[in-house]
Image (cartoon, rainbow, N blue to C red; front, side, top):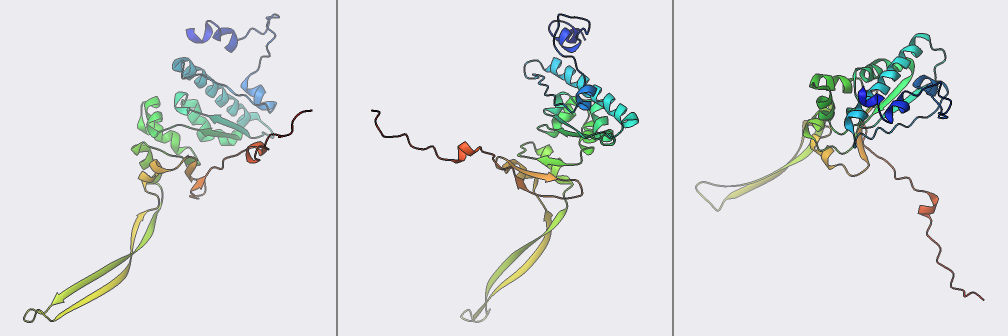
Length: 245
């Protein structure tokens, strides 16, 4: 609390509404949502992870309070999209409540992190980390190098039937007359149960390729398109070769 109420963070997080010299607009989560505004909040966790984590946790707790008010008293609530990058830095119990019950308040959360271990290290419990991911409807995985995360993503995928051709060949000779021999060549179509998507393949996905498990049981393999502007697609015209008069 000392870090959040002292220095420049004090008037930034807790401005005085009676200070006539402070011309900055004062807002809160409920006002931003009710006025259909967009708020981008950069916590700079790379420079100071403790302060960034504390501010992020407070913001998520405030959003959980707003979601509860919308659920109890809101009429004609409009959908609210919330994107939390590096979610392991700010994840807390109110965020888990939002994931679990925020849909009733028309909150749609998207959280992003690198590995399963990030949530386990943050919460101090593997069961808590599984609770977080268990409340997520859609799981989209890009290239993942952590073996535990690979196993978690692919564990719930259904098995599939793999078909392959087994080829055989053999030669035999007569015991009393070695000059007499016979041979055979054969092919058999075999089928066995195997993984729909091997865990190790998640570590070999090219850039922008992903494997999602979507709500409703849909499983796809996709690639994000690279968006380019019209200027990037059109070749630059050659400079004029005419001399100036």
